[in-house]
Length: 187
Image (cartoon, rainbow, N blue to C red):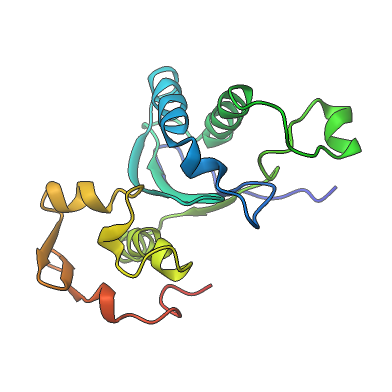
């Protein structure tokens, strides 16, 4: 088995992509959004962290967390979130022999993508990527139309401003989401 190296900086800010095991034709996360929110709130009480940005799509999610000073244990938090969510979902998914042997469900991919945020520009780019993702995947035509996104909180809190057809970061320039192409934000 490959031994992955993950960045573990206490108090760091991290970008994550977490996928369902079944990606095609799966809307498990959005169909169970309140359950997912409940599980995340519960884990945040026991193992505090700040959600800087987040979007939940039908079959995967992207988020950015900041961990408390002296704490780099995002692995435990993700394990608890995945397990807490999975335990509340009726077992109907196909489960491979290797998952059965380990006592695992077939809801989540075992691994996840993690990226340590390095500076303010990296932070801004990842927040933009998170908020743009529903448009990138064709779920909506405008960022503002996706209901399961921290984008709405950013606008309410004045972190992002709004002009007709425009959304922008205060002090960092304009970004016209409606005009961006599907190639925005990389892969």
